[in-house]
Length: 87
Image (cartoon, rainbow, N blue to C red; front, side, top):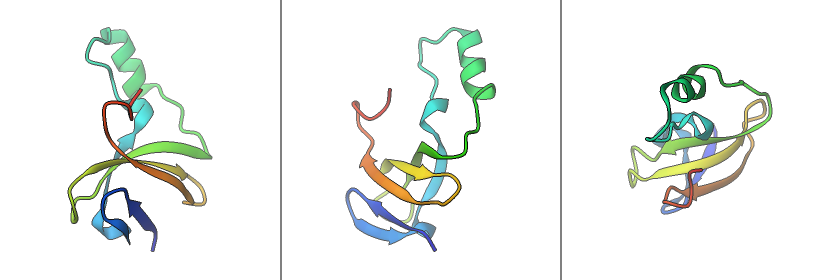
């Protein structure tokens, strides 16, 4: 079982968290429809390291950004979501 370090609660079991999406799939509010469609539906699905948005649903309920390797599931970083966290 994967252990995820919540920035607020510390290390917890993956079963306490819910995966939301990758950070690169967040569409800016002022995006043109063509840009929004490309962001949502024409993204690459790379093997390797990616940034993902997760929620500590069965804990503090905070959102976090996790840097995780998609093949090995190795987690290299987690950080709280804030104004500076998303591009």
